Image (cartoon, rainbow, N blue to C red; front, side):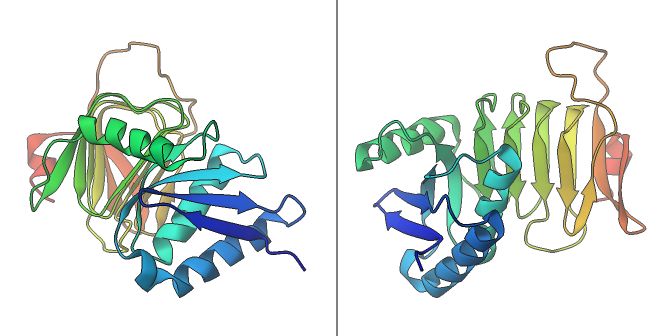
Length: 223
């Protein structure tokens, strides 16, 4: 029986070759198992990820990234296309991401720019996005997420499983939003491209559900 997933590692990236005959559930299970077994080998390296062999939608890509994150210490900073599966291509992708980041400190980091074209950011710190997060893009943080622009894609705060984290944005219209183990999905379609009156909002967990409220200095100070 052929493997559901073959993993090829580079100095700056990981390539997943998916067996098109395997079910997606089998692929996720094997990704989880293989990365758990190789956790010590990869360490906490920052990696670009490419996926080949099977066309995945955005939700499936995120599920694979989450499987890697949950079973290893790897930080997937971006998902790259399959134009060139070479070490130089991974280096170029990571350099493009690094140019947007300010220097890290103990509390968090900043990303300068808008996320688009299915970009994804994952960090073990709190993060401030100085721009918009377009549909199809995702921000994953072990702590808090602040978007100084519009959040129209996906956001996952508290990815380390701890309580008390939040997502805040100047314009809150996410495709999907998750804080810790609690999910929120807006009933309204994302309104990116439309410029309504800016209404900053914050999402946090209250009574075991994610709630959205207008962002005030007093409310933000409670976290």
